[in-house]
Image (cartoon, rainbow, N blue to C red; front, side):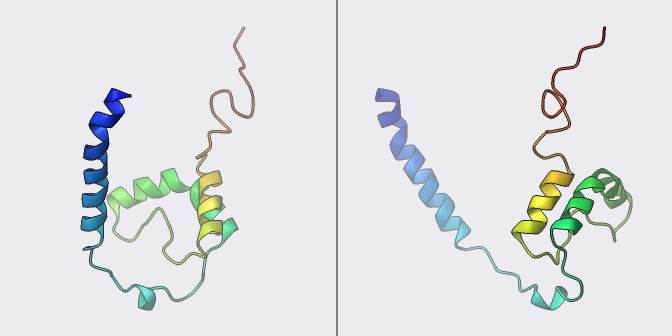
Length: 102
């Protein structure tokens, strides 16, 4: 309990300074750039599946991005998370259990 009391003022000061500096960030107006097709859940799922290929393309080209800019928000993000394996269902002991070679 003494450790918490000792570091609490430092944590509060750090949080306050972080909020203060975040309040000074310049906002970029991006609405004119967001025209055309809006990607939803299925677009996010597909973009999550092909994210490794997009990442390599992004390293060598300027026109390739990993995450779409014109999305409908949370549903796109949820699809992207599932598509990229963000919850780890396909690895480790997730979906298929612990299979050992015999």
